[in-house]
Image (cartoon, rainbow, N blue to C red; front, side, top):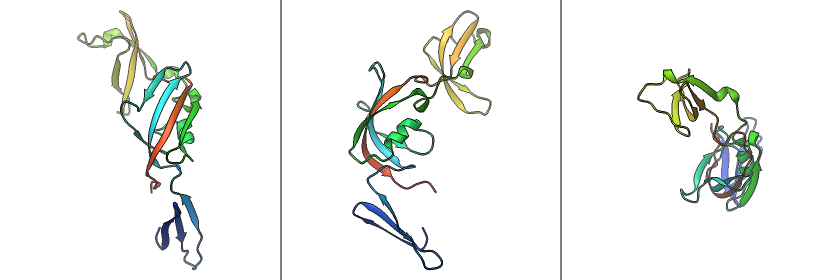
Length: 178
């Protein structure tokens, strides 16, 4: 911010922009609270409602998440905003706010003759495909018959409610994108 004062006082970022008319206003943001567009380091465990674990950072270590760019499920992002460093919480994410609802148009039924002879797709296998825009997509083989191969481009957890236990380790970057 050009022509402004910034300092950290009592763990708050204090910004005093100066307007061209000489007036100023005062903005304070808690430095230890997660805000939209922050990059954060978290430990997590995700579970289906039956208790089975779908993902955890316990084996891989804490993960960095960039908020505000669409890469974090919306419900998880909302749960993180406002958390304090060191805080732990458990949150239930309904399918729509987690990994989305299942979309029928992401299920592709392809003629098996269109696959190269040396290719033998197996149920459960994840393949990469390129869409019409050139973007790479991950699809899972869900059915293989003599005549047809069915691929599913939905996220594996699409359509499922999940719970996440999260612990905020650190706010890595509290600066919103410019």
